[in-house]
Image (cartoon, rainbow, N blue to C red; front, side, top):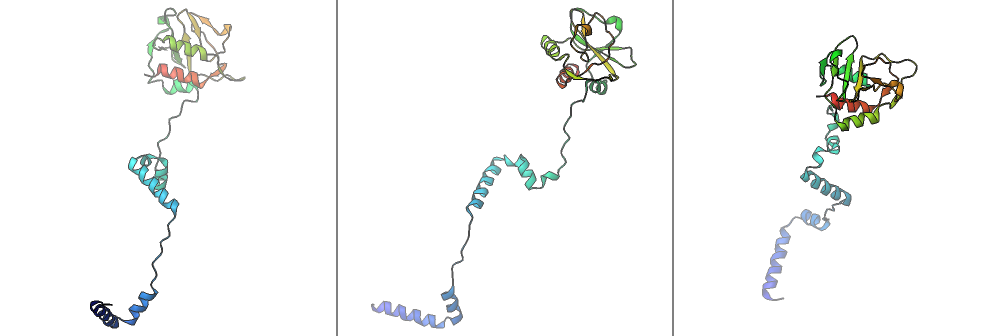
Length: 207
């Protein structure tokens, strides 16, 4: 040890002599604080950060649940009419139909739907159907659950007038006896039209 080193050592010893024993004891017994980490916490935090930056989670049900979004009022889902009769009755004022008289019905040349509401002598004619719509209806006619022994009272009768004069009804089974020719025949329901047929007629009659 040279002279300069001896001087520095002596200086440090002198300085240490002025330090309180309490501080020296704390320094000797000090232990570095340990930090415990869980790898899955870091992974989850990373994933959440990426998704949030992308904006994908902001509109997801998971994010709503985390923030208490499940308390928000949700808009009710639209439900399809239970029966064809209920659809025709409830939509009477909005259907895309033309009011005509019995004498104005043209049984040849075009295919269309004719409606008649209970207690009303006026007929309501749809637009002319496309070939695709005619095929779709013909494939669905006669399909549906049987009404049983008690036929329901219909608030609106409906016929399909075909371009060759044949007249059909979605409430009847597919038999030769359930076909009319150039006349809007009276009938009692034998089947409930299927939901697919209701949807098809709804697409035709809605504006």
